[in-house]
Image 1 (cartoon, helix red, strand yellow):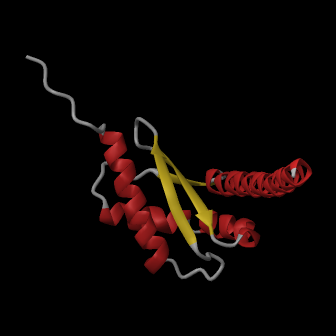
Image 2 (tube, one colour):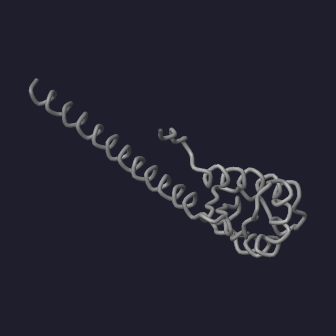
Image 3 (cartoon, one colour):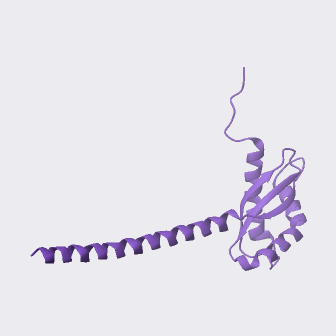
Length: 142
């Protein structure tokens, strides 16, 4: 008899656990001043759990390269602390990757807002012209 599959695979659950633990470690355990306001957005773990891609974003785009250097420098420390908090046979090597999706999403939102403003301006200008034309027509009929 086949077992019912659960909603998430083991690697998904491990990735979520790593994400939670790393977020806490970066917030409280990392003393490097180069690491600014970092948000861990996602973690992808290989099938053998030997490597983990950690996606992150920063609040200030100007500190992106400095934060990347600091995270790369502290990857060994974070891995060892992660090994203490998560009981696994192998603690994955951490590879930090900047997550472009948040900045792309913000850019797309600003473009949509810009187009909406332009459409609203055209619509309101078009209403004013049609109202003036309607008044002129009513005035010529009298």
